Length: 310
Ligand code: SF4
Image (cartoon, rainbow, N blue to C red):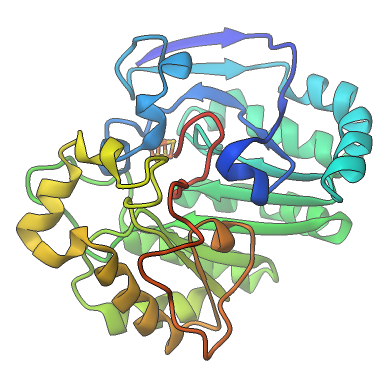
């Protein structure tokens, strides 16, 4: 893992493309992701973004944006004015092209400092999205932030399987991430589980029942329509679809996603599909999931990203 520290000119990026319907801005405390060599990194949309990777293998580098908090404090007021004028609200997605809780966060504290800067000058809304159970580390900060802005925490859990044969293991178990979600919910926070990209589920009823027990919401997205290409072509160039098809041949179709959405609707209070889910726009109880998805086609998921996807 190549580690470096940089000072950036800005930390708030005005969203475009997929993220535009989700938040006004994204914030990336790091460039790169040290979870990139684990299971989620295989289908990670950001790995296809040459502007971000600068030709380096995904998962091989992590750059800490050490002045992130300072840049937030310096620019939040102007960005808030712009966002309220043009988008109606100043909402930040953290993060779409890295994980705010990479293991190195414990030492570097870039995410922590950025959250503290937001405490001092809060956005109107904040979505925190992570694959790491260490998201629980700053729970007191979240509670305070939730008093000052709309805060929703997305914990990514793509499957109930321990492994997909032929692919690397996840950086943390699904159970550990669901337990983290339970802790956050118990602290009174608004938590959603992001099943994105949807991988083959071993026991759908039990999986979504567990999600319903630990979080108020679930977001489901498939790599088709979710990876920034209309047909899932980006993901098709990776080892992920073949590994999915080996354990569940139908899992590489949108019909599979729709079946999982139907199960989720019987187990979880709020269900969102694709970008709508990331934005907190939920299906009504009676609304079936449309397939092929007219709302999310050509858009990204897992962590939506204007700079790629996480
Ligand atoms: S999906 Fe998220 S956590 Fe996984 S490699 Fe990509 S940015 Fe990192």
